[in-house]
Image 1 (cartoon, rainbow, N blue to C red):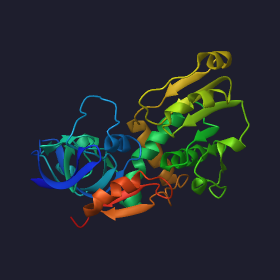
Image 2: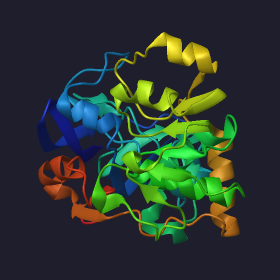
Image 3: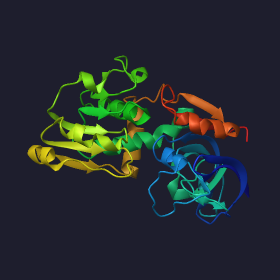
Image 4: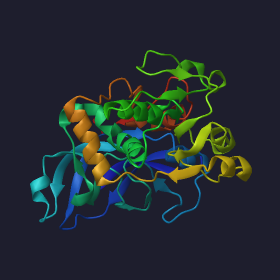
Length: 309
């Protein structure tokens, strides 16, 4: 079996080429991908070459962990999954390229247990399930954030989920004027226009490594900062944090419980994903789509369309 895949050959070097797929094992499924999202967090670090070293890292690699499509074949133990519309959180199934994270391809092979059945009616917005579950994971680990830092795709999902869970609307900080305003159901302001210094919980989704001192200065005593972005290295001045008895919490990967909770919020109508996929390009234009996805501004979420491949 073969697939057409996005391959990062090295920092800022991308190709679209045909790769052989590993054969199906008994518990594997074959998924024809309809759409795959481009992450502005981890995939941007892979694109720029700034991703910290960890197991599985190296080039050439197939990126992507936000893909959706239909199961078209399966091993003998997973035949019941054929026909399902599923979310694919990545795949490691390629000959000649690393699967990190492996979802940006026209066809992928992965263990059936890793593929999550999602409502086909969600269409292209299905690719947002992992990001929404990531936002839910950051919120569910403690008190609901009163301040969210960053109004990109993850910040918007976090604000929506906070309200969908029945908590008060957060304030959101955003330095890009094009991403500010009050038409979102919550206020989005320039940090310079907010003088509050008694926040109980602040969630940072900006991924900006130099913000910790600023955020600590905005905490009340015993307040918590949730680090929901992805960072290379962080440091902060200890005395202000000591005086506030500040707490830091790192929100890592979402869990199956976060996925189920997110889908339940969508199913109930409390959470909608409208207006978050801002740009769609044919997969054949991946070399243009990747740098455009990281340019900021009006590009919230870039999606590759694989349906004609």
